[in-house]
Length: 413
Image 1 (cartoon, helix red, strand yellow):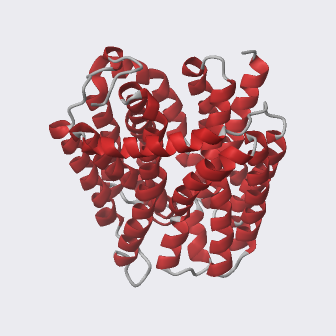
Image 2 (cartoon, helix red, strand yellow):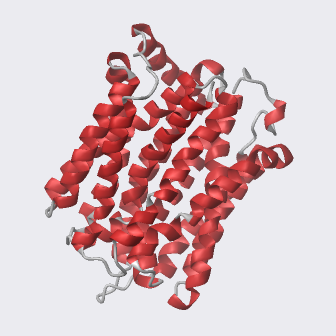
Image 3 (cartoon, one colour):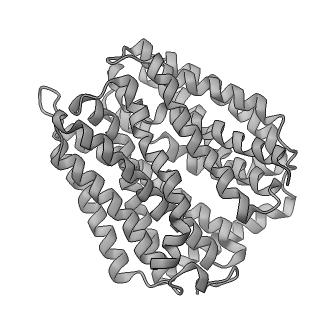
């Protein structure tokens, strides 16, 4: 494949994930400004989980079989951008949530569609997809920088709206850009039924002990991972005293580290294997949250900023390893469905649990003056990370220890 189409696919990923990154870190600073109650914040924060479940069935059963991918992306991002504008200017919870949910219902399916477009047009997906997908990480990093100038140190509601408006602008840009992408025709009619059967086979694999353990650990780690985004904005703003306009940029230290960690991931997997690489990923969560818990004072601002680098280890060593493991070990005909099953934990169940649980704990451990006991709060994900590591250490017994010991058609049975 020549560089032109590959660059287009890279830019597609940059824009795709930048939309998400624009609002994710600061939304839990924005909603209290509108005086939303805690349950309302939890529900709005769970939007991605709701949209993930609905989006999978909509995408698989309707969109994929009736529209070319580039037209589906263009329409979805046009509607999503309009919905983000609605969310930005909504002052009451009901219109805000409906606009935000509408955005999610159209945005979430595009995550898998952009992956499908990339796989369809890369000559060697195994070699090139990682580099193309890295565009998403670049997008998350780049989108934080305009907010340094659009927000202030103590942003008003009017200023904070820019987290949605920037996302909307990028969404419109991607809607237009999608029409220039290579044509990707709809799936054939018979493919949907085959995918449904593959989903059933993927679920049946939960009867295999090591798959069940990995499923449980992924649910725990997904809850921890999403809990970070629920809590980090308020923690940096109110406890560590980071200016509003620098919060997004500081959290992107983790994404920069993610790029570096992804480069060395292959070597680490070959050296220490599946189990210990995943344990290292969860250990990153443990160390990060323990640092937040025991150094929750403004005088430790430099340490809290520096520890954001652990995000790279948390993501690459667990989640990226998880997807590589599924692709290497699971039966070939159900790998895509198995990836979707684990994605439901990351973007669905884990996200919903994190929003309601950590949001409720935060409200419970907030005193009458509005001060959150982050020491107690961050010990919860720390303990969960320890439990997940012990589960992997004691009970995860995969059929192969390292990537090179398995072939493309290795079975999970």
